[in-house]
Image 1 (cartoon, one colour):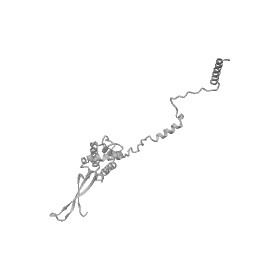
Image 2 (tube, one colour):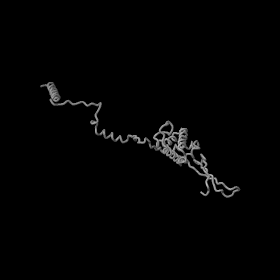
Image 3 (cartoon, rainbow, N blue to C red):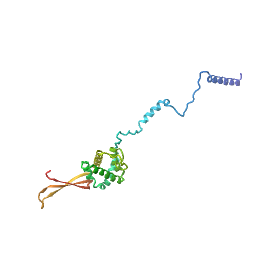
Image 4 (tube, rainbow, N blue to C red):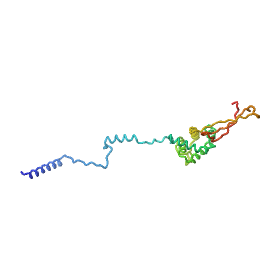
Length: 225
């Protein structure tokens, strides 16, 4: 048998073996893999592990509380910028400081407290100072779950206790920014430089960085008290 015949025989044997394997009864054809979609059960274990690890770094929004109020904390840099903005506009709120103090001391009617809240909010919004406004809204969000107390919120205002807490928290922030209240008494003397007549007239000065923002007059008090 020549070389050519040997090659033909070899090819024939190979083809015979191939068709014998392919068409043997009980032998299943290999299924082609679909690349379009996979069920969850077909997801490799390693892929599931990576997914869980990555999920740890995904920020999740906290679910709103049952009362709908959000507790916000200003970033220290934003708080410091809000302080500088307030110092720039502090003089514009002259006339509201002593009233704010008296309201926080329980010496204001419900109507007067509501009007005070409105005056402060209108003045703050009127500055267009973003961090200063954010400081105010942080308190409003804390107690009311919304931005601004009046603006765009005609309905659903807070109750009396919430109004008091809003004003108290706002006064605390102003104190943290350097605002303070100084009582300065003027003693009434006898004519011709005699002894005190027994009373002093108290004035309250609201001071920021040595600058008097407001002067509020208090009641005369006996020197014996």
